[in-house]
Amino acid sequence: MIRRVAVLAALTLTVATGCAEDATEPAVAPSPSPSASPTASPIAAGAPWYDEVAPAAAGTTVGPEGSTCPLPITFSVPAEWKVKAVTSGKDFQIGPAVPLCEIDAKPAGHIGFLRVWRVEGATPRTPQITLDKFIDDYGSATERQYRRTKAGPLDSFEATWTGDDGRKRAILVSSLYGKILVTLGGADDEEFTAMLPAYQLAKSSTNLPK
Image (cartoon, rainbow, N blue to C red; front, side, top):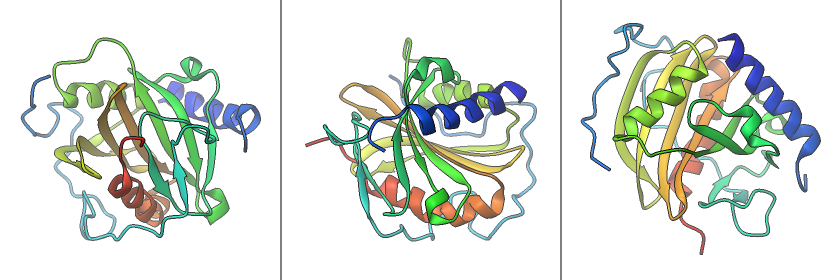
């Protein structure tokens, strides 16, 4: 847990000071982790996926060539969110994931981030193994659940879990240049809930670059 907090804090500081311009289909099942809890999340109805939450209005497109954060995928975020490229991403690797881009909610009045990661190394046998390696290194995690879903038109695999500082979300997307992970995390459950429309926007608008 201490390592994860230190990595994310250092990542945020580095982004703020060192950025540019501003296999086999898995069986979808809860993680066998002994820390998993059957207790329902205390936050709003609709847990754990909150599919009833409508996407926010699109403002900025993240990922196009020549933009602040060129990526193997593109997606939209609300206009107020601040897009920043990550430099020296290897220094902030969590599990198999190296950060590429950080989208800060603070200008929109929230404490949290959407982050984009590139999955490195040999591809695990299932997407769930990839996500578990990330979540295990991220920190304490309970209430893990997984599902196959869509990110825009792209097949993807999604995880939700609860960490020491509240609910988290991650979606793993296959691109032409490997696996890309998009995560949402906030300071607490209230911030997570407030930022869900931005995550839903990113998820629903994801596509390959044109």
